[in-house]
Image 1 (cartoon, each protein chain N blue to C red):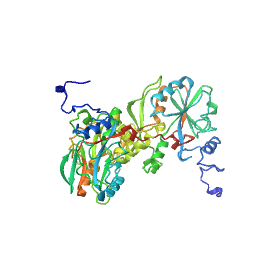
Image 2 (cartoon, rainbow over the protein chains, first blue to last red):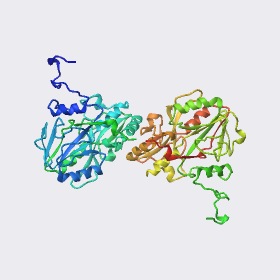
Image 3 (spheres, rainbow over the protein chains, first blue to last red):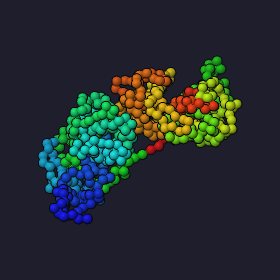
Image 4 (cartoon, rainbow over the protein chains, first blue to last red):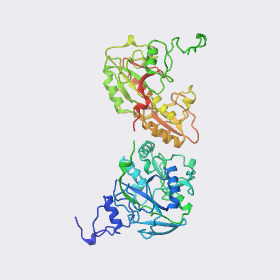
Length: 277
Length: 277
């Protein structure tokens, strides 16, 4: 079905591509046909956080992920200098297949760029980390509601906790959590569902009583939008992918490249394929 | 190893029997060598609640169990007049193999008896229902603490909730829950563990906020001992096997026979064999 060019939304490329197919999505991104957020693309497929570090830091960061699987669920890491992640997608190239990258030098945020081919080096190692999109889809499929899915202009509230991650080498820092409120029976269901997804943050790390993990006022988000928590709801806290980002920034490696928030690596892996139990 | 008779504790029968073996336990009970509680016997094996009803009520009660699997997790029901439950134990006879039975006539509690051979009739149907002992063992094995395991003189606190069970025929009533308090991270673990045991009450039905299920003061138990809930703990509520007992009593069948509380049917089924996922 084709429509007159004048009626085509601006975000739609001139040439059609299949937004439900992760291979087509990556191809469109690589061709510069999509520069926006990835949240609605290739539904049902895992989207990953990206972190690229020099080899000198890679072993320590792998160890940090291994010791902190809830905030840092490592899906795959590349060979040094190899931009492919074959476990996550055939024909996947981390240098070109994300719509936007964020570059850090010595821990300082520099520019966002649409392609990192020019920055790629033989000593860089790419880490793909699981993201809450996957378990949120499972929650929605089970009939639970999420405020930031009902209103996509909202960003899930995040908090810096007092929970120290297990350090590894130069990587250390406190855990960042995201929060989703539920009525008690739904909270139990949300724990059951997300427990089945250990590779994308898994079960919550905390429920109720925010003060016990160093959150003084749960109504004030540290990042994201302030939440509305009903009087019959409990706050559930999940380890958040912002944790490794802040930990890496604090380690001040000479170069680090991540995805731009909400501009993720779209993979061929189905969310359902990550479920255990 | 034998000890002088004078040193043998009173509860120990003159002839030794293996307290770890469910078949030996049932044989000892049948022989009148054990009349006490069963909690410490045959560890690792499922102990079941018993309810015996006339056939005229059995179909409705089976439907009640099917509609309310959390308070009434039906492990096995017998053929009318057949006192065996072959799925729960070879050589198992529900007329003789429990240390104490409680008899109800027209819903009124009558006497407790050590044997119901004389009361057995061709139209009686036996129901064995899962019991929280099984999931509590799994919680303890995972390193969680339970006050009534630390102090066996305590009985788990129970509450009559405002949650109406799904009625079936003459059986209807509100759900009774048991409560165990945990710190948040342990509460999440307890939900994960008990979710794996749907045949013995399964996951909690509620967490936090007792007032939402009609419990006005959680510090005052309706049955059992009043709980101690620490300031850093959340109350978790599980559907309780007292529910079918009160529902059956309210239906006032001409005859109903149950186990005496804490005097359970010891089965050959291993608790671990009930785990799913």
